Amino acid sequence: MSLIKTINFPPLGDDRGSLVALESFKTVPFEIKRVYYIFGTKEGVARGFHAHKSIKQVMVCVTGSCNILLDNGLKREEVLLDSPTKGLLIEDLIWREMHSFSPDCVLIILANEYYKENDYIRDYQEFLSAIKN
Ligand code: T46
Image (cartoon, rainbow, N blue to C red; front, side, top):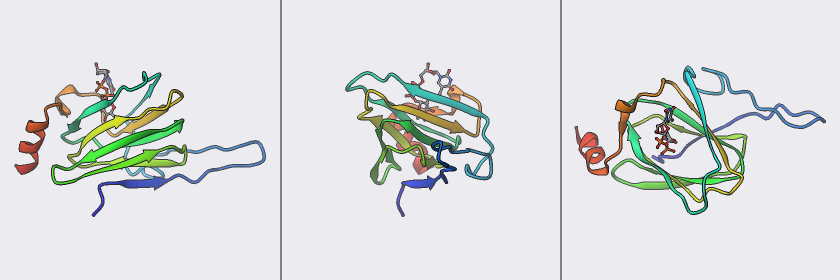
């Protein structure tokens, strides 16, 4: 089974332009408790390099593009996020890395939990051990 779970958000467009609505348990399959966004990423910079123990997230690149690499300890898969109507759902114990940010990239992330540093696994060997347990 692929690690890449995408959600297509229906564009609510009319002749004025487009609009996407992100709603808990509707377009997003969990209760949204936190929204944050990553922008102004410098050229050549990669981010992430961690897994979450229990947080669920949906990532949407509303402007520009970036690549997301997902790793479950057995395989690695990569997806290009380049559309405000495409979301990437990450809900399992998955190592993630983000790279190849375009200069105009704005990556919005919706999470089902508040920020908790103790939910992060930032060491790859620790991640591999967590998967085995
Ligand atoms: C993830 C990827 C996609 C906070 O104080 N509150 C927050 O809600 C977040 C997300 C971060 N921070 C602080 C923690 C660090 O001092 O902001 C700083 C940068 O965070 P971090 O190095 O974790 O950023 P990324 O881009 O590597 O990872 C972020 C999220 O942290 C992470 O949950 O899945 O984006």
